[in-house]
Image 1 (tube, rainbow, N blue to C red):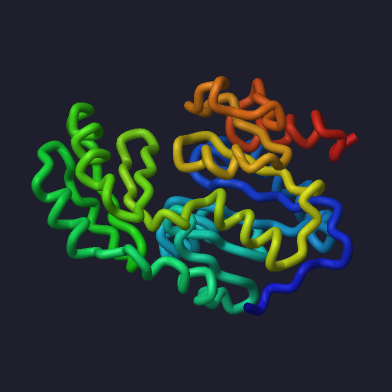
Image 2 (cartoon, helix red, strand yellow):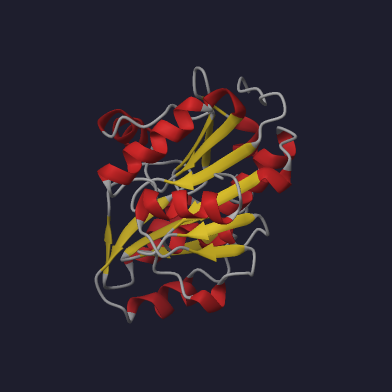
Length: 240
């Protein structure tokens, strides 16, 4: 682990990428400019469903700030700046009960799920073609130590101990980050567990998560994408 906690950061920004931070170039530029001016005082965490290479490509394409930590593959992989090496301690807890071959065999017997071709040791990704396939999948996997994460029509099967929420909680603990300074930003199904962790949060206006699933600590923005994050920063008095 090579990332170091900044001395007394005034903000730990933990944000999803696609359709949360990224999606509106104008407000993204505005938010990036604000963050860049305070970069030494902000601990920046990106949490994404993308695999690591795809996430770094997006960071480059969208000219995003380099994060202190990248959490990729739906919370199964954690990488730390500057060299972005993987946190093997985090992954060491996934081995028990995880069986790639068995998962693939089970899913192969359920119609309406198409493999996405994403190769990750702790993730099996599928495209949902038929809604009626989900109850069959949940039932078939019920005896395994796994979680099923659904976002739009993307279905990810990951270890029970993994996910964006558990990864964020692990980082706050391991890096001794002040939890009261965390702001979690998301929009979709694979962001739900990190928005339910009890930290300050925001779901941007284009988000698909039902309000009834979110705790009172989460602010529902009226603006989409990065504009919603800016709105939340104002709501919480971080931008004055």
